[in-house]
Amino acid sequence: AKSADGYFIIPEITQSAAMPGYIWAADVRRIFKAATKRVSLAATLHADGPEDAFAQICQGCGVPDGDAAKIAFAVHLRSIGRWEEPTRRVVQSVHAIDAASGKERWRYQIEKGPGHRSNPAGLPAKNPDT
Image (tube, rainbow, N blue to C red; front, side, top):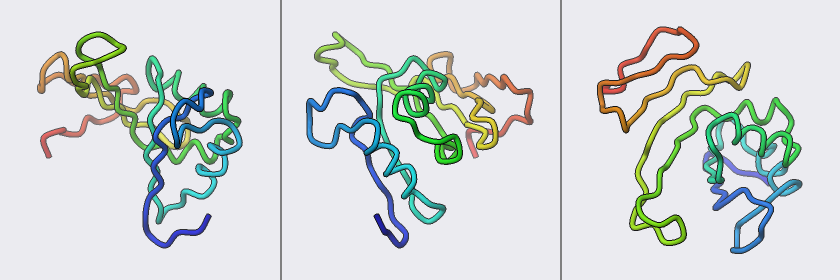
């Protein structure tokens, strides 16, 4: 795939091809490889956190570490209401991912209030309000 400044959107990374755009394995690898510094990538998947998301992307789909290192942020959404028919989804946390290690650099927990920040790597905190 070729693109000059743009983005790819993956509706869902999943083994189930229940809907158009739901992809797994070779298709996921192809999209991650095609995403460059000038092409952004947005994707959704069901995961318990960044570690689980990386496991699905790298181990489950076989995306090489170098391509998975393109992930800069992971946003955890929480469903409100019954999981089968949520009334809405809200941002629960935002995770900044270190490209070199694939580990979380910092996390902003929404459910604990806008002033709460967690910084598991001990890196200098950035102000989320700026």
